Image (cartoon, rainbow, N blue to C red):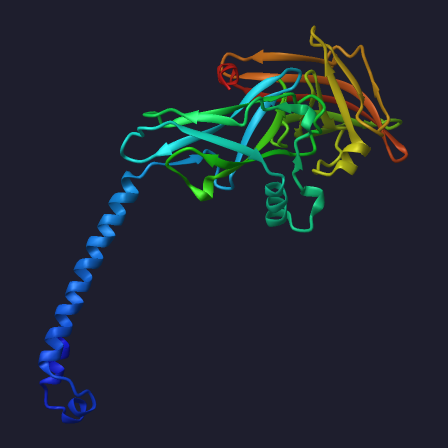
Length: 332
């Protein structure tokens, strides 16, 4: 404002003629502007204070409104949709929250994330695989959280599909809900002792491969992705077949390892591959064991089998190892 006043009082008459205002008008305008900013600042502080102290609850999820939970195959387990209440002051009233299922949320998620790649779409959880006894839960007065239980029965779910239970807030008895966190997509993921159904369980591999009829044996280091199938079955790709998240490849080249209570392994075809278990090899006796070398602990498979790819039969000897922490797994 002072700079503008100096310009007006300067020697540039043309400028003064073009902008014909008085010092009085500047003074009045300056006072008005100052008053505006004072009132704006007061309003802003008042709004901020109200927002800071306001009680607002939200359904707890990751940034994409998805809550991802693992459930053990072979048993029924309980997961929870949880809510958290924010605000500086403690609440003085119960918040009774009613949820409803809404499959349109799954449609919107798939469209936004996968568009026309329908093969990647996440599926609604089959109704016979879960129970919600009540869609109502409460955040008690003075507390900051509440939760709704969901009983999950994961047996029979495909390791190659993802599943959602879509829920949104239909009503609540008091305070406010964060509109951006007023719905949740509960994603059910399966696991067993040996693997998790997310494609990230990778065993290190040391293998020997020989094409039947040849004399040479090929050393074959690498990794193998393992998926859970049932409580005591896992799936891997046979031999050196390339791993991709493609059901057609799984059907063509995947094998299943069934682990008995005595840790002996039965090898079979997942779908179409011709595979034959070979027993009697003392170094690869088709067993599972837990190894502890004094520093680290490993889940270990020792496998011996033959499988056919094209016109060739491949003789496989495999050691698969996964480092793990027993205490961490017990606490999951």
